[in-house]
Length: 186
Image (tube, rainbow, N blue to C red; front, side, top):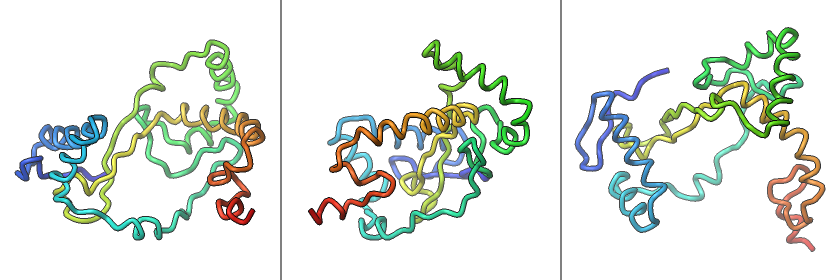
C-alpha cells in the first residue's frame, strides 16, 4: 500500500506531514455530514469547482474480474480490515474454523449484539484521477473486519430471498433478473 505523500488543504496550501494529510482528508470528508449549503461551499473550494461529467460516470463499466469465494460469499485478494485477517486465511482454515465461527455467529444472532471489534473500520483513500494533491480526487473506503464481512454475507444470503419475495414489481432497479426498462414497457 502506498501512502499519500501530500495534499492541498482548504487554503490550497500543500501539506506533507502525515498528521496534516490526515487532518486535510478528515476536514474534507467531514463536510459530507454538515448542512447542504455549507457542504457544497466546502466541496467547491476543495475541488476547485471541477465536476465530473455524469455521463462519464455512468458509462464506466461495473464489471470487475474477481475470484469469488466458494460457499462463504467472500472474495479473494481483498484488503484486510483492522483485524489484518485476509479472506484467504478464512477459506484455507475453514475446516478448523467453521465450528467456532458457527458458535460465534449463532451467539451474535441470539444475543442481537455484535462484538465491539466488528464496529471498527479502517478508512483509506483511493486515488481516482486528476491532481493527486487535491483531496477531492480521492475516494474514501472503509476496510471492515473479515469475520464481520463473512457473517454479513451469510446473513444476507439467508434474508435476501425473503426480502426479494416481498418486494413489489415496481422495485425492479436493483433486483436480480429484473430491469428498470421492464416497468416502462407496461
